[in-house]
Length: 188
Image: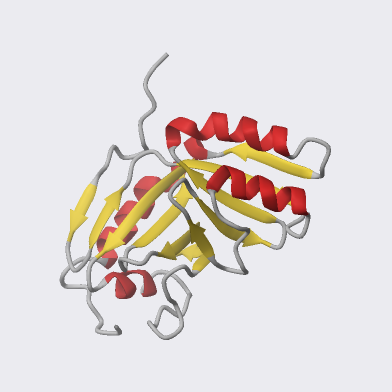
């Protein structure tokens, strides 16, 4: 069996911001009833944090949970532990109404860092990224130009972006073009 590799093998670009394809990230899509105490405890056990509020991402030392919709979370875990975490999640939720699937290998992950990060994303995503509106821990599902994506901002002012692996090269080129030193518009 071959070793897993990320979509772009850690490709990077430095311009007005630095764009990096992050490599492999463990991701579990979890659907269920957020108010169910069994569901809430299962999320705590798997990622070490509570079910997030609407359009938020919460983090702990062992994982993260992102709000995707009123009945869907994206759980982010260490790639090497994804299958074990998925098995534990399914065991914890047995007998309840839920759906959980490993989507790690179907996704690509990127970061955008640097002072121009907000501007880089604002040029390609229809989201108000002003610092007053979009803060650390905020999470959005949206479109980046022609493709679906999700993103959040962490405490270090780094944007994290997830898209389908099949469009990873398009996403990288889109972010790279938006981060070109001569492409600034001076919004943020």
